[in-house]
Amino acid sequence: MTIAGVAGYVVHEQELESRRVDGDTAARATAIGAQAGSEFLELHVTHYTPGRSLPRTLEGVQEIVYAASGRGTLVVDGEPHELEAGTGVYLTAGESYEIESPGPEELLTVSVTAPHTNGAKPGAGSRTVRLADQPLLTASGDREFRYLVTDEVGCRDMTQFFGVIAPGRAPDHSHVYDEVIYVLEGHGILHGGGADKPVSAGTCIHLPPLFVHSLENSGDAPMRIIAVFHPAGDPASRAYEANE
Image 1: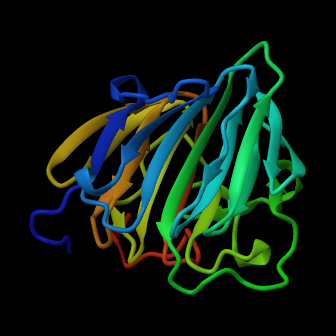
Image 2: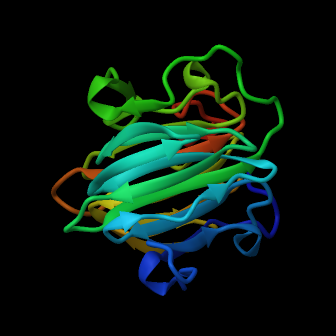
């Protein structure tokens, strides 16, 4: 079942309005938020030109970051952390960070903010997680995923994962959690709510709880996504799944 009046939201990053403060290297756009029907999660796409960004302080929210392309250094309270494509990062409320990009290419990050509900887990492990270091797991429909930011690095409220969707369409299904997605590679169609919406690299998606959908890979190569959902848990879990 779906919630009456609730449907998936799709927007491409090229449609977004980025904002850059004078003297900053970061151009930040909000792709998903209250305007898309997401009450808890906000999805942001940020491009960093060469140089060091102005400090960003997290006031009342936590943030999960994913380096989608480029490289750089994340500095949190004076402590540097290497960023490269495929790196996940967890930042807690009250922290301040800067990102330095050496260039010449831009550094692109996809991040999700949300209020603290359960607080950060004390004594957790490293702040950053490398995709290459995470084990490969499987889900239904020939789909694969790797966990990135979880409670192992202190995040109790959300889960970040990297997903690979093989060509084809999985059965319609829904989740109990609220989810935001950024398409890194590939193209396809989001089916749900009586509509078929095209998606491609740079597309941002919001899937509300219990929204019956299927993200089809209509290409001949794997589709790759980065996603965050709330509350934390297993991305392969289903509230509903149609029969094959």
